[in-house]
Amino acid sequence: MLFFVIETFRNQDGRAVYRRFRDQGRMVPDGLIFHESWIAADMSRCFQVMECDDVGLLQRWVGQWSDLVAFEIIPVQTGKATAAALADILDAT
Image (cartoon, rainbow, N blue to C red):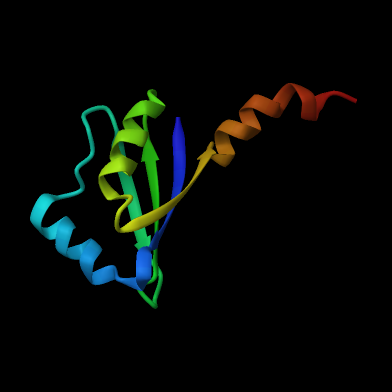
């Protein structure tokens, strides 16, 4: 399952987040896949796409960063997968 993750840096302290990332890496447990990230121009937030089949892996990862980051996690699916899932409904008249 794909997750869109919005990280808001506590106290707008992106430097602390990047310092930990430099020193310890992303700290994702095996089975949690990082796809890509984007950083807001003001360095206050990070937007990521993560993937896993076990939500517990995502929770473990969040726990390692929650002192520096507040998380909003949204389960998502690609537009292509959604269109395929809805194909029968869309074609019904």
